[in-house]
Image (cartoon, rainbow, N blue to C red; front, side, top):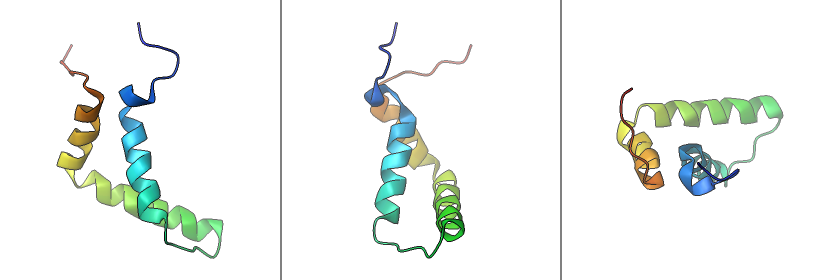
Length: 66
């Protein structure tokens, strides 16, 4: 059984960490521009499967098909 909150076991935490780092020096004019930037950065991550595999590997969890 997993604890109630375990960020080290959650691959999404790695995604958010990389995303926040990528947005750190940007200054959007409004929320629409910010949403577009976030969408673009997430889309770029989607095309890097090794990066996404790294987020899962970082957790130490082993994924097995059912």
